Structure formats: structure tokens, C-alpha cells
Length: 300
Image 1 (spheres, helix red, strand yellow):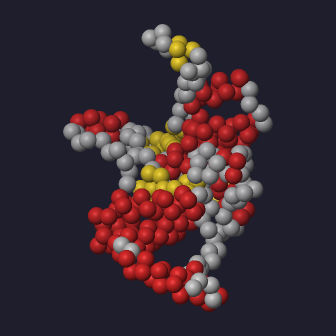
Image 2 (cartoon, one colour; image 1 turned 180 degrees about the horizontal axis):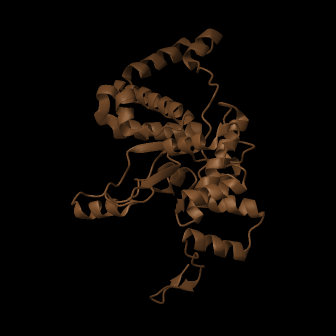
């Protein structure tokens, strides 16, 4: 069961590209006229276009390297590590890199959603301030754009770094945790989360790693958000810890991934299962073709 936007596996062994012109010269292919015409075209090429292509390739390499460690690809990082003094060309270079990623690598850069206001204090502060809400987070991740038929684990297996088994275990664990949080209206208390993990014998260890360390790694990488609510000043009481779905969890796994995970666990889909899934995830039943809307118009 692959999530709807399965995390792509970055290339681990990349062969250097050879220059086709050099190969033709070494093999004796191409007449002198062809070589002369090729040089003429090269001389007349737009140097700015060639420079943009090189920067786009540099951005692709930077994105692939970040994906290994699941580090968000931030706009500021792109300007600093890729563009340098060409920061104003961000949109142009980004579009060229997207084209290369889609046509050659079968991936694309997708912007992570803005972190939601969770606490009452945060929501009140947002309402009091007159600042315009952010429309983008300025951070991106790589996601696959391959058809669903090619996103199976047999075709895109987990990365071999650190090991295939460790990566597959981690992938399964964070998909499980994100799904459980989402199925509980997007918020799960820490005691309830630990009860779920205890039933799965995963409350202490996940593979060879401590569960606490795995959860911290998930939090650092943006799959989950751990929120601590402290009692007001002057009031006694313990801190309340809740877990929420993080921006990477929303983009990489998504609702489709959660529904696919549940269907895989139960073995088959049924009307009763689909009804409960939609109720748990707050999804309205899709409108059937040919039904009428509120205005009496037929919806196809």
C-alpha cells in the first residue's frame, strides 16, 4: 500500500554523463560540416540560457541531497547554496528545475503547508494581529509524480541508507503514527498514543532504535508536531502533551495515504469501512454523477 504521494527514493549511484559531441569525435562520427555547424550553433546560443540550465541542475542536486535526510528544501537555502548573487532569478530557475525533475527524475518539488495554529492562544493572537495570513511556507519536499501503477514497493523500494530494512521499518512506523493521529480528529494525547504503541509492542523500541528517539526524529523531520500545554502561571497541574500531524506528514502521506493504509490493514474495502473512514477523517461522501445540487441543477 503506497501512500498517494509516495516519497521518492533519491538516486544512490549516479553515473557521470558523457558529452555526446566528444563521443562523436572519438568514434569518428559526424563530418567536418556537421561539426562546423554545431560550433556555429554553440557560439550563437544565449549564454544566459546556458547559465540558467546549470543553476537548475545545481538546484536538482541540492534537492536530491536534502531528500536523503528528509530536510525541508527552504527558499532561503536555495538562494544561499544554489543561486548566490542570482537570487532574483528564483522563479525562473525553479521552473527549469521542476521541468528537469518531472521529465528526467519522475519527481517534483511541492511546497509544504503552513503550520496550523493549534493552541487557543495562537488563534487569538492571529485574530488580533492585522497581518495577512501566509499563503506558503517557503519550504519544499520532493514527491513522486509517477503513475500509481509504478509507485509500488517492488518498483520503488525503500532507500538502502542506512539499511533497506531500517528504512522500511521507519516508513511503516511514521505512516502508522500519522494515520492514527489523523483518525482521531487530527489530535492525539500522549497517553493514548502510547496505548496504541503498547498494543503493537512498539512503545519501547522501533527496530533497533528507542521509540522516544524515533518520535523525536519524526518531529524534527515534520511528520508530527508535539505540543506541550502548560498550566497558567500560579495554577498547579501537569503539562498536557498532544500530538498533531506535521506539514510533511500532510504532504507526503495525505488523506489518501491514510485511507490506503487502513484498507490494507483490514484486507478489503467495504461500504461500512468506507463510511467509518469518511466519518473519522471528516470527509463528506463524494457526490455521485447525475445527482442534483441545491439549485436543482444536474451535476455530472
